[in-house]
Structure formats: C-alpha cells, structure tokens
Length: 317
Ligand code: NAI
Image (tube, rainbow, N blue to C red; front, top):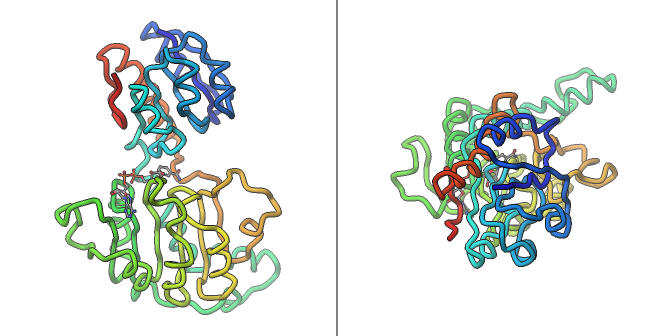
C-alpha cells in the first residue's frame, strides 16, 4: 500500500512517517494546493491524507486507484463527499481530538469580546488608560449565550459556558430533545439570534450552512450583542457582518476562521476595530495537534488492515 500526504501545515511529518513505517505502508508527501497538484503527486496511491487540498471527482476520475481519503480535522468540507460516494471512495476524519480546545477557544473569544479585553489591550498600548475607552459594558452574569449547532463542540461550549451566563440556548434541528442537556433551552434559529447576547457558531460547513449567518439573522441580533465563529468562515456572510458591525448594532465579532485563509492584511475584516481574530487556531494545543495527526493517519492503517477506517464519514466499496 502507498499513500500521499497531500498537504500539511505542521512543522514536520515525523509522527506520520513513524506510524506508516511500522505498518509497512509506503508514504510520500507534497504541498498540493489544487486538484491537479494532488493528481500529479498521487501516482500509485490507494490512500490520501489531506489537510486543505480540494478533493473531488476530478481527482477520483484521474486516479481511480484511490480508495480512501482521511482528513486532518473534524470538518471535511474540503472533500466532496457526494463525489466520493459516487466513486465508492471511503472518507474519514478525526472528529474528537480537540473538542475541548475549540470550545475553550470559543468561550475565551466570547468573554474577551464581552469584557472588551482585546480592545482595552489595544487602547492601553496606545496610551489610553480608562475603563470607558472601549464603550459600555453589561454584566455577563445577566446574559444569554446562544449556540448554533449542538454537536460535540457546541455541547462542550454549552457545558463550560453555563456558569458564566444566566441562560444557555441552542438551535440544532438535527438532534433529538434528549440530546439537549437539561441546562440548555432548545430554540429556533430566529429565537437564537433574537434572544442571545453572545452567539457562538458550531455548525459544519454544508450546502445548507454556507452563508446562513447573513443579514436575515444578523439584523435580529440584540443591540450590543457579539458573534463568535470558530466553525468555518463561509458560514458567515462577511459583508453582512461588516454592515451590522458598522451600524453599531453588534458590539464586536471574534473570528478564528475566515472564508479565505489567510486573509489579505488590508482587508476590511482584518482592519475592523471591533473584530478580534485568531489564525484558525481553535483546535490547537500541543497534545491536540499530536492526537489529530495520529488519528487522521491511523484511519489509513485501519483501512489497510481491516477494510474500514476508525472514523467513517462516507462508507466506500
Ligand atoms: P458535530 O458534527 O459533532 O456537530 C455539528 C452539529 O451541527 C450537529 O449536531 C448538527 O446537527 C448541527 N447542524 C448541522 N446543520 C445545522 C444547521 N443548519 N443548524 C443548526 N445546527 C446544525 O461537529 P463538531 O465536532 O462539533 O464540529 C463542528 C465544526 O467545527 C466542524 O464541522 C468544523 O468545521 C469546526 N471545527 C473548527 C476547528 C477550528 O480549529 N476552528 C476545529 C474543529 C472543528
């Protein structure tokens, strides 16, 4: 068996090399950006381990010997699952390596916005020393936090938020009432956006969620509320978000993910004074990075040994 690591932004791939050496699997690595790059680099490969490279029918048609794709990460929107299904290719991911990291990052961003931490830091360094420099602030203990997408990360976010906020509400049409913890109130999408003082997004990027946080819901948000996105950049319509920030309705937004990563340094979203950014880092801790890499790489070893990966997104043939 031979596999290709199509692309990676880790400092090295020694962990993967050791795992595949021990399993007797040949490994090659590249830094592919396009389908064409992947096709060129994957000659003779049955498996792909991918980070951001796009994988779809183009790749599967050109390389029918590819039988499995494993993604470094919980999200798998860079892999076209319908195309994989049509070509009988397994798709797998690594969904549970960094649930705590992402939820903690989301809560840290939420509290940083509500307590104006990043704004104060900027003001103090610019020589301004007064509690009022960043505007009016309300009491977090009186507030409602709203969660869109109550899956693994959303549930953890609810759990670690509940002692800071008065109320936790969530919208997730795809889970049953029994999957809502007792301390989380189930609401509709419109109720979520109208009632929450802070909204944290935890939905996957799908055809349905692409651009779902647009003017139609942002305009429902309470004056002075905040939005946090650690899910995927394309879930939010950036122009609509900028409009609602400029209007003064939103007090701030914190974004770990953007529609185009990295963003242009002079883009409006990067320059906006009420936007707090991190570089798609919510997943990161030393331990989580290792677990992510080990689990994503192991999917291919499991498939070679047992005919199926440990984490199945699409069942192949
Ligand atoms: P999950 O699959 O456990 O949960 C997603 C939840 O969203 C599910 O319960 C699903 O029913 C719900 N959902 C789907 N469509 C919805 C809709 N239209 N409205 C409301 N809810 C909807 O996924 P998990 O592990 O919680 O991860 C969520 C996302 O977080 C991933 O898909 C990924 O894109 C992102 N992520 C970001 C990271 C980062 O470093 N910034 C790291 C890890 C994940």
